[in-house]
Amino acid sequence: MTDWLQYALAKPGAWRDQPFGDDVVAKVGPKIFVFLGGSGVGAVSGVGVSCGDRDAADEWLQRYPDDAAVMAYIGRHGWNSLRVGGAIPDDEIADAIDTSYGLVVAKLPRKVRDALS
Image 1 (cartoon, rainbow, N blue to C red):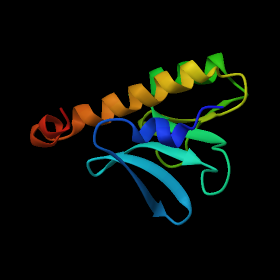
Image 2: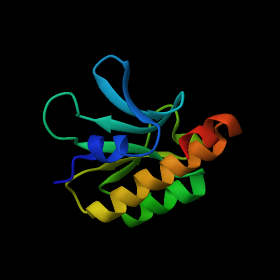
Image 3: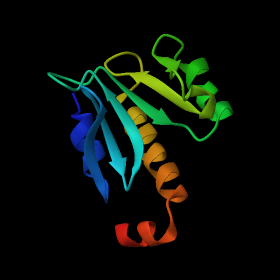
Image 4: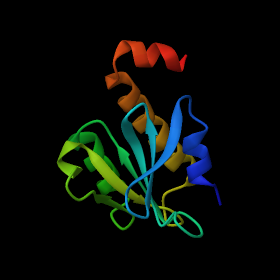
């Protein structure tokens, strides 16, 4: 089992935050790039990631209907929740976290992006 929190925090400029009570997120600069469900005690049960847009996010729903879901509140912006330990292979979850990180970094001010390099 991959430690998804450590995986996310290994990204340049990533840091851990808990802006919503016990829910853990990984941020780069001031922006969240992954939500880590069930990470308070024990293993992560799911990750919430940005897929870029709703069309790209919907591809996950088609491929993994039992393990991917539209995230509440921000799903219309292309965010999905992916269940860990189900049908989605770990390498695809890693790719989803990498993509989410890249999408969020791309939207940061240039000064912040340059500081990450």
